[in-house]
Length: 400
Image (cartoon, rainbow, N blue to C red; front, side):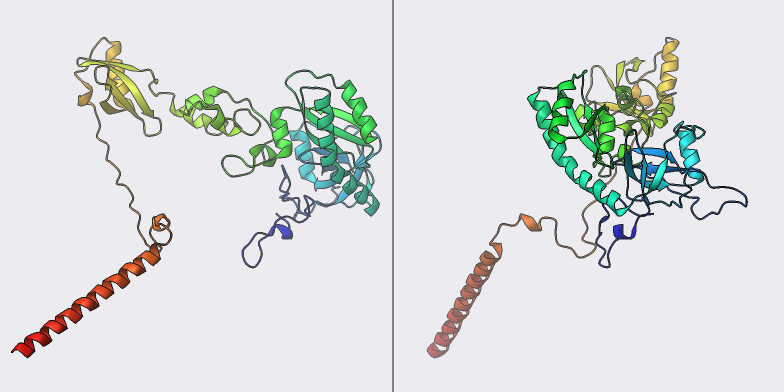
C-alpha cells in the first residue's frame, strides 16, 4: 500500500518518498494501519461511521467526529478542532476500522464533546502549516540553547507546531523534575507564540524520532509497536545472552523491546531443563556444567579435577543422573553417558561463478609491472642461451 513515488524505477533503483510523509495511501508513515475493508461497500441502510483517524507530526494520532458529513478518504488534509484555534492533519483511516481502533485504544465514540473535523484544508491552510513546519528545526535549536543558558537538566527532543501557527508543543526528556517556568517565558518572548511543554519517556522519544536499529531495519516502536512492555535483564539470561549493556540497549538507552519476542519460547523450553549450576556426583569425581544448548537439549560437563576435558550429555541423561543422585546413588563416570557429536566440515570457498580469488586485493600495487619486467628478463636470457648454442654448433662444424 505504498504510493507510486515510493516504488522503484525502471533501472531497479528506489525512487524514495517525494511527498514528505503525506503519501496518498499513508503507506510510508509511522504506525500505519492497513485498511482491509477499503474495497467493501456498506450494507443497505447502514450509515458510515462518523469518526475518522487523523495523523499529525510523527506518530501522534487522534480521532475526530465528522459532523459535517464530509466525503473524506485516506490522504486528505483536514482542519480539525483544537483547544484554541485549529490544527492541520492528514486522514489516515476511515470507516469501520476507526471503530475498532477506538475500542482498542479505549476512546469513547459516544462522547458528545469529542473534537470535530471543521473542513478540508484550503491551500491557505496548507501554506501556513508548511511554513510552520519549516521553522521547527530552527526553533528547536534555539530552545536548546536557552535551556543550556538556564542550566536546566533536560533535553528538548522535538517541536510540533499547531496547524494555524499559534502554538508550539515542545517534547522533552528529563531524569528529574524540571522547573521550566523561566524557560517558557524566555521562549514565548523569543518566538512570539504560546508554549506548551510535554514530558515524554525515552522510549516515546525514540518512537517519535525514529531510526535504524542494530538489525538494519527501522525501529519497531516507530513502525508497528504500540505498547511498551517492561523488559528485564532476566529476559537476556533466559536466552543465554551476554549481559553487555552496549549490545542489549536500543537507541532509547533502555533494554531492547525485541528481547521479549522469543522469551516465551525459551521459558517453555527451560521448564524441564536442568539448571546452569547443576552438579553431578560420580564415582570418578564431582562434575560441573560448563555449557548448555537449550534447543538441541545438550549439556557439557567436566570434572573438577579435569576442567579442560568436556563431556556431552543429553537432557534426559542429565535428569537420569540427577534422579539417581537424589537417591544418594553415584554413577560410575560421565564417559558411560557421553555422546559423540559429528564435527561439521568447514565450507571451502568455491569459485562457482567464475569470480576472482578472495585474496585478489592483497597483492601490492605495481605487481603487474614487476612481473612484466621479470618476464622480459627471462626472455632475454633465453635468447642469449639460444645464440650461444648456435655459435657452438657453428664452431664445431668448422672444426670438423
